[in-house]
Image (tube, rainbow, N blue to C red):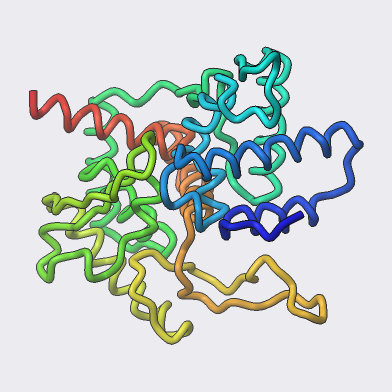
Length: 302
């Protein structure tokens, strides 16, 4: 097989090689998805970040356009009677199963994609629930909090103010905050689209978000000292491992204070929701909270 022309496809090949043994049929199906994804990249049908990162290639922003294009037949490897007809329902379902397997192997959360190429969206909290959440977070900030709860409170406050996606949150850096914490710069990465340039905007922050960020930045300063510094806003709370062994097969340690990646942010939301007794205020998924905040912001501007 020729060397892949995209880093994300090279990473996908490595992932496929490392996956547990499966039957020949499943291997062929996974190979079909791999070829389709590379074809979609060559056709410039996926967002630009999908070329360089496996996480972006298997992310929600890329899989929606990919599935719609694959189901249309545009990514077929061979012509059928001289054309590329839509793929069958069986093939479409098989494609979803393969994507679930690939995302699981890559350590990514479930997307619950549908055959139409769109996620099966869960209901969002009502505006009254968002107001109750703000009140609870404000009360929490009045007392002592663990670093984990401080970080979660700051994340939630930013989502409520900006409706930022998880990938947009993990991209935030200290330099994206004004010195007085009154504004934050968010680089928007639309859920759908092709290679449209990333756009950004400065957004005002509420007193709740400013107070939460003040608490988090104080805790963060101690954490990043272990990791020799980073400009990323969200960092890990405790030592962990890199996920890949070294050349001798040993786990590679990582100190506390390392940049928190998207999957880590999502996991911290899910665990924090249960650990801090916030199930009555927070939906099961961070994306549900984001969409509720987005709807509330849109309602204020109409």
